Length: 294
Image (cartoon, rainbow, N blue to C red; front, side, top):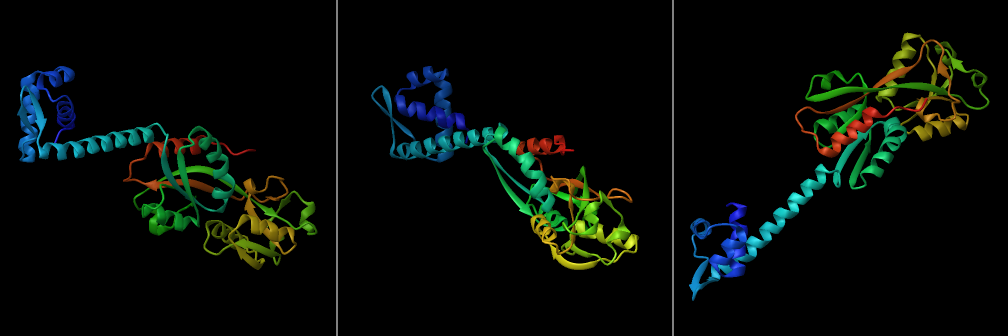
């Protein structure tokens, strides 16, 4: 059923006159009459009956007029809503990432984006990289910020992976610890030292364990946490040493690795088979354009 036929039917119902309705619609009377007949045939009922020189709605016509008006109003509302999405006046984005991404990176990027597009609503999920990848594949997240390499089980899946930022990790040291007087650390300095680490299985923990094994260093693991703030607080309390992103150390007190920089590659992941909304396209561009403070 064509929407033009519905609109023309409503104009004819309002005027009650074929000539006046055709003039208002810039149609010939035969063309308008043909549309009405086509509409009546599709419904299987008569919508008008003649009354003198005019037309009056039948009972079926009165009933159909209410529904036709509502249908066109809903269609107009839908078109307006879709237009708002394209203009970034509304929409939703579900983004996931690890502790560093959600705590240190996304606030700095979402802040300016939200100022430009206040109608876009965000859902942010913090979880390990593997969990974020699974949520993206399941369609629960539009975009994930993860650490490479991805687990072998998902590396060849439907994911679109784009390298993003190189993040450096630094070592936080308690105030009274001998290493506090240095600017850099070496892996041998961590042997038998109390260590506060990210939870087992997390991307940062796997990176740390790999480097410790490569340098045959065995620190004394005293605590496992998943919160950057918790690790920072525990280190400040003198419980042990802890690794965090350099972005989570704005005061610059963390020690950089003196053997070689301890870095990881962050990447954007999304489903290959899902088209991007206007909001996701714009936010993704903001992510790629953002540069971390030096």
